[in-house]
Amino acid sequence: MNEDLAKIEIVKHLYSAFMKKDIPAILKLLSEDVEWGEPKNPFNPAGGTRNGHAGFMEWINIGKDAEDILILEPRQFLTDEDSVAVTGYMKCRAKPTGKVYESDFVHLIKFRENKICKFQEFFDTYIAGEAFRRT
Figure 1 (cartoon, rainbow, N blue to C red):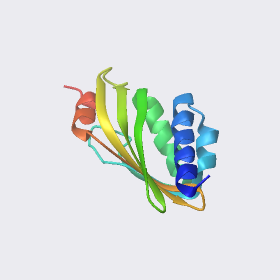
Figure 2 (figure 1 turned 90 degrees about the vertical axis):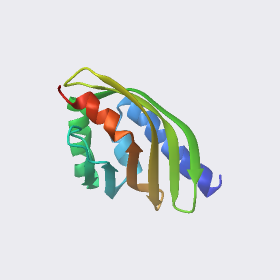
Figure 3 (figure 1 turned 60 degrees about the vertical axis):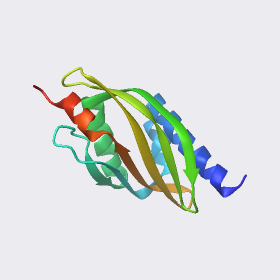
C-alpha cells in the first residue's frame, strides 16, 4: 500500500473510532505530543488548541459535556507528503441549549512516523457559537 493510502486509512480509522466513542483506539493513532485544535469561540467551550494525550483528553471531556456529534461525514481526502486534508459535513447538538447546528468542515491532519501529530479543525464557528449561546 502506498504511503498516501496508508495515511488515508489511518484517518478513516480515526473517524470510525470517533463515531464509536472508542477513546483508546483514538489515542493509539495520536503521537504523545499531538497538537489538537479548533478555532476559539467565546461560546464554544471546546475551542482552542490542546497538546499531548492529556490535552486531547481534556478536549474530549469538555466535548462530552458540551455537545453530541450527530453526524460526522468525511467526504474527500487530499494528501501530500506528511498530511491529509479532509473535507466533510457535521451535525451537532449543543447540550446546554439543545440547539442543533450543521457545518461543512475541513480537518488538516499532519503525520510524523505514522502517528497523527497535529489535528486542526476548521468549520463555521459563528453558527456553532450561536448554538451554544443562551439568548
